[in-house]
Image 1 (cartoon, helix red, strand yellow):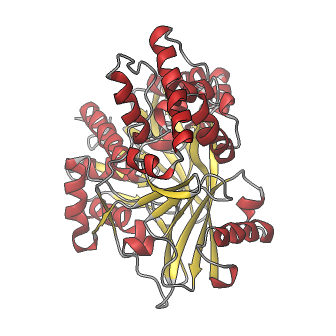
Image 2: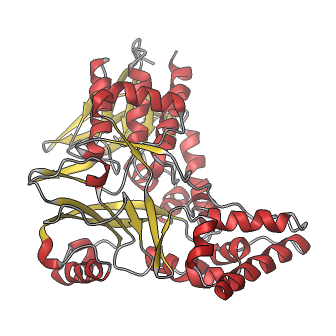
Length: 459
């Protein structure tokens, strides 16, 4: 180990940035490598023309007090508090998201509601009398919500969103990604009063119905920008447009990281390495290569690509809310960041963030005229905007948007993580490096935890 320990961080999303923030502010030498032109990874914006377009809807929650207060201090007047106003298009109407019980009662025909409730009742009774372990996501969803609600709400939406039938997804997916319907929770509590308690697996806790999010007038780019600035002010380095090319190990430790910038490969010696790049990439770039078993396991870890259509629209406003989820359209979510305070030029225009899942090279990924036309048709059917209202279409991508929890992925993941842990100065964490679904504050907490672990070893 060198006299001045050096930590290299791979990937400049919220996790990597906050790991660098924790280390740099106590004087540790840290270098962060980010392949993008701006810091932030998936949780940033890209400027096209005079406007910023987010790579999805990204806002900071207040749940982690320590991180929230730190970010607010860094952002200062750039931070805009925004009340949560999310909706879901369901059963022909708009509902607050997460779904609330009173909305279901008001919006769903009585006999339909009874049918869903009986299905939920049957599922809970079955689990209470004969507990069983679901084998896949389909069974997990039926266990949680009953057959009728699964067939109506989850089956087609999950299949369309992922391009994979729920039978081919792991039950782990439900416990880590699928938000829990608070409306269903109310019914479950009512059933519990009659002795029918919920012994099934748990889905992800939904966001609060009333909470404050934080945004900025230049979109999601502001938070990673101020974090990067704070890191550099404390002596750390943030190198953008730097593609990691090789991670070199010697005698069971990471000794250096190589990256390519401006066509030239450069080397960074390191005492600790925190990786937030996708796990398969970490395996592919390590030299000497891990054993074949680990390489094969890494190839089994899949990611779902995303294509974001950033639209400049000649309308002052398009939707009522921050973002709306859709179940049966070309897109799965539409956000209007102007409603959260984004400055849009010229006056009288707005920006829409139209999110789609896709496959690399398909029509949505390439942004073909046919794909755009189908999106325009769905936007018009939802009374959001017409094709003639759209002034610009800006296409943004990520080939590793979401980890995909395929049926049977767990042994492959465990095998790769066992290899990571065999290198005592290497950590792989965050959304893509940890193969998880954290929101921004959770990803930053993962970065802080990784930084503290590295700190213990180098002090």
